[in-house]
Image 1 (cartoon, rainbow, N blue to C red):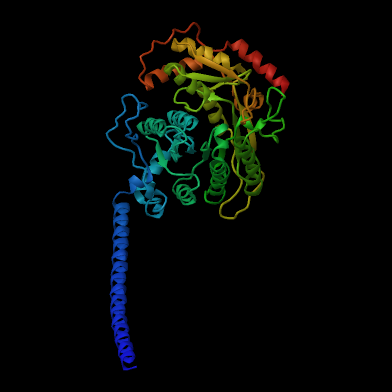
Image 2 (cartoon, one colour; image 1 turned 180 degrees about the horizontal axis):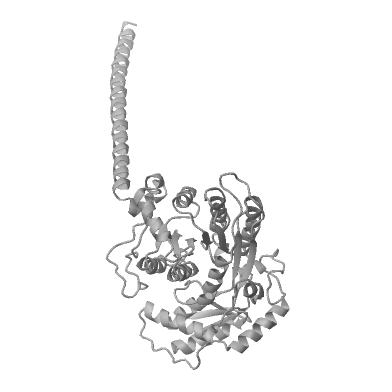
Length: 481
Protein backbone atom coordinates (compact mmCIF):
# COMPACT_ATOMS: atom_id res chain seq x y z
CA UNK A 1 0.00 0.00 0.00
CA UNK A 2 2.71 2.55 0.85
CA UNK A 3 4.29 1.78 -2.47
CA UNK A 4 0.95 2.40 -4.21
CA UNK A 5 0.55 5.72 -2.43
CA UNK A 6 4.05 6.69 -3.41
CA UNK A 7 3.33 5.80 -7.01
CA UNK A 8 0.14 7.83 -6.96
CA UNK A 9 2.09 10.74 -5.48
CA UNK A 10 4.60 10.54 -8.26
CA UNK A 11 1.79 10.50 -10.87
CA UNK A 12 0.06 13.47 -9.26
CA UNK A 13 3.32 15.36 -9.19
CA UNK A 14 3.84 14.57 -12.89
CA UNK A 15 0.31 15.66 -13.70
CA UNK A 16 0.80 18.89 -11.77
CA UNK A 17 4.10 19.48 -13.48
CA UNK A 18 2.53 18.69 -16.87
CA UNK A 19 -0.38 21.02 -16.13
CA UNK A 20 1.96 23.84 -15.32
CA UNK A 21 3.86 23.21 -18.52
CA UNK A 22 0.58 23.17 -20.46
CA UNK A 23 -0.45 26.46 -18.89
CA UNK A 24 2.87 27.98 -19.82
CA UNK A 25 2.47 26.74 -23.40
CA UNK A 26 -1.10 28.10 -23.64
CA UNK A 27 -0.01 31.44 -22.27
CA UNK A 28 2.87 31.54 -24.71
CA UNK A 29 0.49 30.61 -27.59
CA UNK A 30 -1.92 33.39 -26.66
CA UNK A 31 0.96 35.85 -26.65
CA UNK A 32 2.11 34.72 -30.11
CA UNK A 33 -1.48 34.85 -31.40
CA UNK A 34 -1.96 38.37 -30.05
CA UNK A 35 1.28 39.44 -31.67
CA UNK A 36 0.18 37.96 -35.00
CA UNK A 37 -3.15 39.82 -34.85
CA UNK A 38 -1.34 43.09 -34.13
CA UNK A 39 1.05 42.49 -37.03
CA UNK A 40 -1.87 41.66 -39.34
CA UNK A 41 -3.76 44.80 -38.36
CA UNK A 42 -0.66 46.93 -38.86
CA UNK A 43 -0.17 45.43 -42.32
CA UNK A 44 -3.79 46.13 -43.27
CA UNK A 45 -3.53 49.73 -42.04
CA UNK A 46 -0.30 50.24 -43.97
CA UNK A 47 -1.89 48.82 -47.13
CA UNK A 48 -4.93 51.08 -46.80
CA UNK A 49 -2.63 54.06 -46.30
CA UNK A 50 -0.76 53.20 -49.51
CA UNK A 51 -4.02 52.80 -51.40
CA UNK A 52 -5.22 56.17 -50.14
CA UNK A 53 -1.96 57.87 -51.16
CA UNK A 54 -2.08 56.23 -54.60
CA UNK A 55 -5.67 57.35 -55.16
CA UNK A 56 -4.85 60.85 -53.95
CA UNK A 57 -1.81 61.37 -56.18
CA UNK A 58 -2.87 59.40 -59.28
CA UNK A 59 -6.65 59.81 -59.72
CA UNK A 60 -6.42 59.87 -63.51
CA UNK A 61 -5.09 56.32 -63.56
CA UNK A 62 -8.25 55.16 -61.84
CA UNK A 63 -10.74 57.08 -63.91
CA UNK A 64 -9.65 56.94 -67.52
CA UNK A 65 -7.07 55.64 -69.96
CA UNK A 66 -5.93 57.09 -73.26
CA UNK A 67 -3.20 54.58 -74.13
CA UNK A 68 -3.29 51.22 -75.83
CA UNK A 69 -2.80 48.00 -73.91
CA UNK A 70 0.83 46.97 -74.28
CA UNK A 71 0.29 43.28 -74.88
CA UNK A 72 2.49 42.72 -77.90
CA UNK A 73 -0.56 41.69 -79.92
CA UNK A 74 -0.37 41.65 -83.70
CA UNK A 75 -3.59 43.66 -83.74
CA UNK A 76 -1.96 46.89 -82.65
CA UNK A 77 -2.94 50.13 -84.35
CA UNK A 78 -0.49 50.92 -87.16
CA UNK A 79 1.76 53.77 -86.15
CA UNK A 80 0.24 54.11 -82.70
CA UNK A 81 2.53 54.54 -79.73
CA UNK A 82 2.69 51.56 -77.37
CA UNK A 83 5.15 53.03 -74.89
CA UNK A 84 2.58 53.23 -72.10
CA UNK A 85 0.41 50.42 -70.83
CA UNK A 86 -3.29 50.82 -70.25
CA UNK A 87 -3.96 51.94 -66.70
CA UNK A 88 -7.21 50.21 -65.94
CA UNK A 89 -7.01 49.61 -62.19
CA UNK A 90 -8.69 47.16 -59.89
CA UNK A 91 -9.24 50.12 -57.61
CA UNK A 92 -11.55 51.77 -60.13
CA UNK A 93 -14.67 50.20 -58.65
CA UNK A 94 -13.67 50.34 -54.98
CA UNK A 95 -12.25 53.85 -54.65
CA UNK A 96 -14.71 55.64 -56.91
CA UNK A 97 -15.50 58.22 -54.24
CA UNK A 98 -11.84 59.33 -54.28
CA UNK A 99 -11.78 59.92 -58.05
CA UNK A 100 -15.27 60.55 -59.45
CA UNK A 101 -16.18 64.18 -59.11
CA UNK A 102 -12.67 65.43 -58.33
CA UNK A 103 -11.78 68.85 -59.73
CA UNK A 104 -9.38 67.40 -62.30
CA UNK A 105 -11.85 64.71 -63.32
CA UNK A 106 -14.67 67.22 -63.78
CA UNK A 107 -12.42 69.51 -65.83
CA UNK A 108 -11.57 66.71 -68.28
CA UNK A 109 -15.19 65.59 -68.57
CA UNK A 110 -16.50 69.10 -69.17
CA UNK A 111 -13.83 69.82 -71.76
CA UNK A 112 -14.71 66.69 -73.71
CA UNK A 113 -18.47 67.27 -73.38
CA UNK A 114 -18.39 70.88 -74.55
CA UNK A 115 -19.77 71.34 -78.10
CA UNK A 116 -17.51 73.03 -80.61
CA UNK A 117 -20.35 74.68 -82.52
CA UNK A 118 -23.40 76.78 -81.75
CA UNK A 119 -26.37 74.58 -80.99
CA UNK A 120 -24.19 71.48 -80.77
CA UNK A 121 -25.21 68.47 -78.74
CA UNK A 122 -23.50 67.21 -75.60
CA UNK A 123 -23.66 63.42 -75.78
CA UNK A 124 -22.73 60.67 -73.33
CA UNK A 125 -21.89 57.61 -75.44
CA UNK A 126 -21.84 54.29 -73.60
CA UNK A 127 -19.95 51.48 -75.31
CA UNK A 128 -17.70 54.09 -76.94
CA UNK A 129 -14.89 51.55 -77.20
CA UNK A 130 -17.16 49.31 -79.24
CA UNK A 131 -17.64 49.12 -83.00
CA UNK A 132 -20.73 51.31 -83.48
CA UNK A 133 -19.99 53.44 -80.42
CA UNK A 134 -16.54 54.49 -81.62
CA UNK A 135 -17.76 55.35 -85.13
CA UNK A 136 -20.69 57.38 -83.76
CA UNK A 137 -18.42 59.22 -81.33
CA UNK A 138 -16.04 60.13 -84.15
CA UNK A 139 -18.90 61.38 -86.33
CA UNK A 140 -20.41 63.49 -83.55
CA UNK A 141 -17.05 65.01 -82.65
CA UNK A 142 -16.29 65.74 -86.31
CA UNK A 143 -19.43 67.82 -86.72
CA UNK A 144 -18.77 69.84 -83.56
CA UNK A 145 -20.75 68.03 -80.86
CA UNK A 146 -19.37 67.39 -77.38
CA UNK A 147 -18.76 63.73 -76.59
CA UNK A 148 -17.87 61.79 -73.46
CA UNK A 149 -17.44 58.04 -73.84
CA UNK A 150 -17.70 55.16 -71.41
CA UNK A 151 -16.66 51.52 -71.84
CA UNK A 152 -15.64 48.63 -69.58
CA UNK A 153 -13.30 47.12 -72.21
CA UNK A 154 -14.28 43.56 -71.39
CA UNK A 155 -12.65 40.55 -73.00
CA UNK A 156 -15.61 39.20 -75.01
CA UNK A 157 -13.27 39.83 -77.93
CA UNK A 158 -9.72 41.16 -78.10
CA UNK A 159 -9.59 44.26 -75.84
CA UNK A 160 -6.65 45.58 -77.89
CA UNK A 161 -9.11 46.36 -80.69
CA UNK A 162 -11.26 48.35 -78.27
CA UNK A 163 -8.19 50.16 -76.97
CA UNK A 164 -7.30 51.01 -80.55
CA UNK A 165 -10.69 52.65 -81.03
CA UNK A 166 -10.21 54.47 -77.74
CA UNK A 167 -6.91 55.82 -79.04
CA UNK A 168 -8.61 57.13 -82.19
CA UNK A 169 -11.03 59.05 -79.99
CA UNK A 170 -8.33 60.29 -77.62
CA UNK A 171 -6.40 61.66 -80.61
CA UNK A 172 -9.46 63.79 -81.37
CA UNK A 173 -9.90 64.97 -77.80
CA UNK A 174 -12.69 62.62 -76.72
CA UNK A 175 -12.46 61.22 -73.20
CA UNK A 176 -13.48 57.57 -72.90
CA UNK A 177 -13.85 56.53 -69.28
CA UNK A 178 -12.78 53.04 -68.28
CA UNK A 179 -15.88 52.13 -66.29
CA UNK A 180 -19.10 50.14 -66.23
CA UNK A 181 -22.69 51.23 -66.88
CA UNK A 182 -23.77 49.43 -63.70
CA UNK A 183 -21.66 51.83 -61.65
CA UNK A 184 -24.45 54.05 -60.34
CA UNK A 185 -22.07 56.42 -58.55
CA UNK A 186 -20.14 57.09 -61.75
CA UNK A 187 -23.30 57.88 -63.70
CA UNK A 188 -24.51 60.17 -60.92
CA UNK A 189 -21.23 62.09 -60.93
CA UNK A 190 -21.28 62.36 -64.72
CA UNK A 191 -24.74 63.93 -64.76
CA UNK A 192 -23.74 66.24 -61.90
CA UNK A 193 -20.69 67.41 -63.86
CA UNK A 194 -22.32 67.86 -67.28
CA UNK A 195 -25.88 68.71 -68.39
CA UNK A 196 -25.82 66.20 -71.26
CA UNK A 197 -28.47 66.90 -73.87
CA UNK A 198 -28.43 63.29 -75.09
CA UNK A 199 -27.34 59.79 -74.12
CA UNK A 200 -26.39 57.38 -76.91
CA UNK A 201 -26.54 54.07 -75.06
CA UNK A 202 -24.73 51.45 -77.13
CA UNK A 203 -23.05 49.44 -74.36
CA UNK A 204 -24.33 45.86 -74.34
CA UNK A 205 -23.29 42.24 -74.33
CA UNK A 206 -23.44 41.30 -78.00
CA UNK A 207 -23.59 37.95 -79.75
CA UNK A 208 -26.41 35.45 -80.22
CA UNK A 209 -24.58 32.16 -79.63
CA UNK A 210 -22.44 33.29 -76.68
CA UNK A 211 -25.64 33.75 -74.68
CA UNK A 212 -25.86 29.97 -74.39
CA UNK A 213 -22.47 29.94 -72.62
CA UNK A 214 -22.75 32.99 -70.37
CA UNK A 215 -26.43 33.92 -69.94
CA UNK A 216 -25.92 35.97 -66.77
CA UNK A 217 -23.63 38.43 -68.56
CA UNK A 218 -26.48 39.29 -70.94
CA UNK A 219 -28.89 39.95 -68.10
CA UNK A 220 -26.30 42.03 -66.23
CA UNK A 221 -25.44 44.20 -69.23
CA UNK A 222 -28.52 44.31 -71.44
CA UNK A 223 -31.18 44.43 -68.71
CA UNK A 224 -29.60 45.64 -65.46
CA UNK A 225 -27.24 47.96 -67.35
CA UNK A 226 -30.09 49.50 -69.32
CA UNK A 227 -32.04 50.08 -66.12
CA UNK A 228 -28.96 51.69 -64.59
CA UNK A 229 -28.69 54.18 -67.47
CA UNK A 230 -32.42 54.95 -67.43
CA UNK A 231 -32.35 55.43 -63.65
CA UNK A 232 -29.51 57.92 -63.85
CA UNK A 233 -31.06 59.81 -66.78
CA UNK A 234 -34.46 59.98 -65.09
CA UNK A 235 -33.44 60.70 -61.50
CA UNK A 236 -29.92 62.18 -61.50
CA UNK A 237 -29.87 64.41 -64.59
CA UNK A 238 -31.24 67.96 -64.51
CA UNK A 239 -32.50 68.55 -67.11
CA UNK A 240 -33.23 65.04 -68.29
CA UNK A 241 -31.45 64.07 -71.52
CA UNK A 242 -33.06 62.34 -74.48
CA UNK A 243 -31.92 58.71 -74.70
CA UNK A 244 -31.19 56.82 -77.93
CA UNK A 245 -30.26 53.19 -77.36
CA UNK A 246 -29.35 50.06 -79.31
CA UNK A 247 -32.02 47.42 -79.52
CA UNK A 248 -31.55 44.75 -82.19
CA UNK A 249 -33.13 43.19 -85.27
CA UNK A 250 -32.94 39.97 -83.25
CA UNK A 251 -36.17 40.98 -81.50
CA UNK A 252 -38.07 39.84 -84.59
CA UNK A 253 -37.10 36.29 -83.66
CA UNK A 254 -39.28 33.70 -85.36
CA UNK A 255 -41.20 36.29 -87.36
CA UNK A 256 -41.60 35.16 -90.98
CA UNK A 257 -43.23 38.29 -92.43
CA UNK A 258 -40.80 40.21 -94.61
CA UNK A 259 -39.45 42.78 -94.76
CA UNK A 260 -39.37 43.18 -90.97
CA UNK A 261 -41.41 46.19 -89.90
CA UNK A 262 -41.57 47.93 -86.53
CA UNK A 263 -45.28 47.05 -86.60
CA UNK A 264 -44.60 43.28 -86.68
CA UNK A 265 -44.82 41.09 -83.59
CA UNK A 266 -41.67 40.69 -81.48
CA UNK A 267 -42.90 38.33 -78.79
CA UNK A 268 -41.15 35.19 -80.05
CA UNK A 269 -37.40 35.66 -79.51
CA UNK A 270 -35.15 32.91 -80.84
CA UNK A 271 -32.28 33.57 -78.42
CA UNK A 272 -31.61 34.90 -74.93
CA UNK A 273 -29.81 37.85 -76.51
CA UNK A 274 -32.98 38.71 -78.42
CA UNK A 275 -35.05 38.26 -75.26
CA UNK A 276 -32.88 40.76 -73.35
CA UNK A 277 -33.28 43.30 -76.14
CA UNK A 278 -37.04 42.77 -76.21
CA UNK A 279 -37.07 43.18 -72.43
CA UNK A 280 -35.18 46.43 -72.95
CA UNK A 281 -37.92 47.77 -75.20
CA UNK A 282 -40.52 46.99 -72.52
CA UNK A 283 -38.35 48.66 -69.88
CA UNK A 284 -38.00 51.72 -72.13
CA UNK A 285 -41.78 51.96 -72.31
CA UNK A 286 -42.01 51.96 -68.51
CA UNK A 287 -39.41 54.71 -68.02
CA UNK A 288 -40.98 56.81 -70.74
CA UNK A 289 -44.43 56.43 -69.19
CA UNK A 290 -43.44 56.99 -65.57
CA UNK A 291 -40.60 59.51 -65.77
CA UNK A 292 -41.17 61.26 -69.11
CA UNK A 293 -37.86 60.20 -70.63
CA UNK A 294 -37.58 60.73 -74.38
CA UNK A 295 -36.44 57.30 -75.58
CA UNK A 296 -35.60 56.03 -79.07
CA UNK A 297 -34.70 52.39 -79.72
CA UNK A 298 -32.71 51.41 -82.81
CA UNK A 299 -32.90 47.90 -84.23
CA UNK A 300 -29.59 47.31 -86.01
CA UNK A 301 -29.33 44.81 -88.87
CA UNK A 302 -25.94 43.02 -89.18
CA UNK A 303 -23.61 46.02 -89.06
CA UNK A 304 -20.18 45.57 -90.67
CA UNK A 305 -17.16 47.62 -91.69
CA UNK A 306 -13.68 48.78 -90.59
CA UNK A 307 -12.87 48.43 -86.89
CA UNK A 308 -15.66 45.85 -86.66
CA UNK A 309 -16.25 43.01 -84.21
CA UNK A 310 -14.07 39.90 -84.69
CA UNK A 311 -16.95 37.63 -83.65
CA UNK A 312 -19.05 38.72 -86.64
CA UNK A 313 -19.14 36.34 -89.62
CA UNK A 314 -17.54 38.65 -92.21
CA UNK A 315 -14.61 39.39 -89.86
CA UNK A 316 -14.02 35.82 -88.71
CA UNK A 317 -14.37 34.52 -92.28
CA UNK A 318 -11.75 36.99 -93.51
CA UNK A 319 -9.31 35.82 -90.84
CA UNK A 320 -9.97 32.16 -91.63
CA UNK A 321 -9.56 32.67 -95.38
CA UNK A 322 -6.19 34.38 -94.87
CA UNK A 323 -5.07 31.66 -92.45
CA UNK A 324 -6.27 28.84 -94.69
CA UNK A 325 -8.64 27.58 -92.03
CA UNK A 326 -12.09 26.11 -92.83
CA UNK A 327 -15.25 28.18 -92.38
CA UNK A 328 -18.72 26.89 -91.57
CA UNK A 329 -21.72 28.30 -93.43
CA UNK A 330 -25.39 27.75 -92.66
CA UNK A 331 -27.35 26.60 -95.67
CA UNK A 332 -29.64 29.26 -97.18
CA UNK A 333 -28.74 31.88 -94.55
CA UNK A 334 -29.33 35.46 -95.70
CA UNK A 335 -28.52 38.69 -93.91
CA UNK A 336 -29.39 42.36 -94.39
CA UNK A 337 -25.76 43.52 -94.16
CA UNK A 338 -25.64 47.22 -93.23
CA UNK A 339 -22.46 49.27 -93.62
CA UNK A 340 -21.25 51.17 -90.56
CA UNK A 341 -21.38 54.64 -92.18
CA UNK A 342 -25.07 54.16 -93.00
CA UNK A 343 -25.81 53.06 -89.43
CA UNK A 344 -23.93 56.05 -88.03
CA UNK A 345 -26.07 58.39 -90.14
CA UNK A 346 -29.13 56.70 -88.70
CA UNK A 347 -27.89 57.07 -85.13
CA UNK A 348 -27.09 60.75 -85.61
CA UNK A 349 -30.47 61.31 -87.27
CA UNK A 350 -32.21 59.68 -84.32
CA UNK A 351 -30.31 61.93 -81.91
CA UNK A 352 -31.14 65.07 -83.88
CA UNK A 353 -34.88 64.30 -83.92
CA UNK A 354 -35.21 62.71 -80.47
CA UNK A 355 -37.39 65.38 -78.89
CA UNK A 356 -37.18 66.56 -75.29
CA UNK A 357 -37.78 64.59 -72.12
CA UNK A 358 -40.62 65.97 -70.03
CA UNK A 359 -39.72 64.72 -66.56
CA UNK A 360 -37.95 66.41 -63.68
CA UNK A 361 -35.36 64.82 -61.43
CA UNK A 362 -36.24 67.33 -58.71
CA UNK A 363 -39.97 66.78 -58.55
CA UNK A 364 -40.06 63.21 -59.87
CA UNK A 365 -42.99 64.22 -62.10
CA UNK A 366 -43.42 64.76 -65.83
CA UNK A 367 -45.11 67.71 -67.49
CA UNK A 368 -46.64 65.59 -70.26
CA UNK A 369 -45.98 62.68 -72.61
CA UNK A 370 -42.49 62.34 -74.07
CA UNK A 371 -41.45 60.75 -77.39
CA UNK A 372 -41.13 56.94 -77.40
CA UNK A 373 -39.86 55.63 -80.73
CA UNK A 374 -38.31 52.53 -82.30
CA UNK A 375 -36.72 52.24 -85.74
CA UNK A 376 -35.11 49.67 -88.00
CA UNK A 377 -31.65 50.57 -89.30
CA UNK A 378 -30.86 48.12 -92.09
CA UNK A 379 -29.80 48.01 -95.71
CA UNK A 380 -33.14 46.67 -97.09
CA UNK A 381 -31.29 44.14 -99.29
CA UNK A 382 -30.85 40.63 -97.84
CA UNK A 383 -27.81 38.85 -99.31
CA UNK A 384 -26.93 35.13 -99.10
CA UNK A 385 -24.01 34.64 -96.74
CA UNK A 386 -22.35 32.62 -99.50
CA UNK A 387 -22.36 35.77 -101.63
CA UNK A 388 -20.57 37.66 -98.85
CA UNK A 389 -17.92 34.94 -98.72
CA UNK A 390 -17.46 35.10 -102.50
CA UNK A 391 -16.78 38.85 -102.29
CA UNK A 392 -14.20 38.29 -99.54
CA UNK A 393 -12.53 35.56 -101.61
CA UNK A 394 -12.19 37.93 -104.56
CA UNK A 395 -10.87 40.82 -102.48
CA UNK A 396 -8.38 38.68 -100.55
CA UNK A 397 -7.33 36.71 -103.63
CA UNK A 398 -7.80 33.37 -101.93
CA UNK A 399 -10.47 30.68 -101.91
CA UNK A 400 -12.22 29.72 -98.68
CA UNK A 401 -12.36 26.16 -97.42
CA UNK A 402 -16.14 26.07 -97.00
CA UNK A 403 -18.23 23.61 -94.99
CA UNK A 404 -21.99 24.06 -95.39
CA UNK A 405 -24.32 22.65 -92.73
CA UNK A 406 -27.97 22.93 -91.77
CA UNK A 407 -28.78 25.78 -89.41
CA UNK A 408 -28.60 24.54 -85.79
CA UNK A 409 -30.94 25.55 -82.97
CA UNK A 410 -28.51 27.98 -81.38
CA UNK A 411 -30.48 31.23 -81.63
CA UNK A 412 -29.63 32.17 -85.22
CA UNK A 413 -32.44 32.86 -87.68
CA UNK A 414 -32.55 31.98 -91.42
CA UNK A 415 -32.81 35.55 -92.71
CA UNK A 416 -33.16 39.22 -91.81
CA UNK A 417 -34.72 41.92 -93.98
CA UNK A 418 -35.31 45.49 -92.84
CA UNK A 419 -38.14 47.81 -93.72
CA UNK A 420 -36.72 51.29 -93.01
CA UNK A 421 -39.64 53.42 -94.17
CA UNK A 422 -40.28 54.91 -90.71
CA UNK A 423 -36.63 55.99 -90.30
CA UNK A 424 -36.63 57.34 -93.86
CA UNK A 425 -39.73 59.41 -93.13
CA UNK A 426 -38.71 60.72 -89.70
CA UNK A 427 -35.04 61.54 -90.19
CA UNK A 428 -34.14 60.81 -93.79
CA UNK A 429 -32.40 57.49 -93.28
CA UNK A 430 -31.38 56.00 -96.62
CA UNK A 431 -28.57 53.42 -96.79
CA UNK A 432 -26.36 53.90 -99.86
CA UNK A 433 -23.44 51.48 -99.50
CA UNK A 434 -23.50 48.18 -101.39
CA UNK A 435 -22.04 45.03 -99.88
CA UNK A 436 -19.23 44.99 -102.47
CA UNK A 437 -18.14 48.53 -101.59
CA UNK A 438 -18.55 48.05 -97.85
CA UNK A 439 -16.51 44.84 -97.76
CA UNK A 440 -13.80 46.54 -99.83
CA UNK A 441 -13.52 49.26 -97.17
CA UNK A 442 -13.37 46.58 -94.50
CA UNK A 443 -10.67 44.56 -96.29
CA UNK A 444 -8.59 47.71 -96.88
CA UNK A 445 -8.63 48.35 -93.13
CA UNK A 446 -8.20 44.65 -92.26
CA UNK A 447 -5.04 44.30 -94.36
CA UNK A 448 -3.52 47.48 -92.94
CA UNK A 449 -4.47 46.78 -89.34
CA UNK A 450 -3.01 43.27 -89.30
CA UNK A 451 -0.10 44.25 -91.56
CA UNK A 452 -0.85 41.57 -94.14
CA UNK A 453 1.12 41.18 -97.34
CA UNK A 454 -1.94 41.02 -99.60
CA UNK A 455 -2.65 42.85 -102.83
CA UNK A 456 -6.34 43.72 -102.82
CA UNK A 457 -8.28 43.26 -106.06
CA UNK A 458 -9.19 46.50 -107.84
CA UNK A 459 -12.85 47.56 -107.76
CA UNK A 460 -14.99 47.27 -110.87
CA UNK A 461 -17.69 49.72 -109.68
CA UNK A 462 -18.07 52.51 -107.17
CA UNK A 463 -20.34 50.38 -104.99
CA UNK A 464 -22.89 53.15 -104.55
CA UNK A 465 -26.53 52.54 -105.36
CA UNK A 466 -27.83 54.71 -108.22
CA UNK A 467 -30.13 57.48 -107.02
CA UNK A 468 -33.02 56.20 -109.13
CA UNK A 469 -32.65 52.72 -107.72
CA UNK A 470 -32.53 54.10 -104.20
CA UNK A 471 -35.74 56.08 -104.71
CA UNK A 472 -37.48 53.11 -106.28
CA UNK A 473 -36.48 50.83 -103.41
CA UNK A 474 -37.58 53.38 -100.81
CA UNK A 475 -40.96 53.68 -102.52
CA UNK A 476 -41.44 49.92 -102.63
CA UNK A 477 -40.43 49.59 -98.97
CA UNK A 478 -42.81 52.32 -97.89
CA UNK A 479 -45.67 50.59 -99.67
CA UNK A 480 -45.06 47.40 -97.72
CA UNK A 481 -45.09 49.00 -94.27
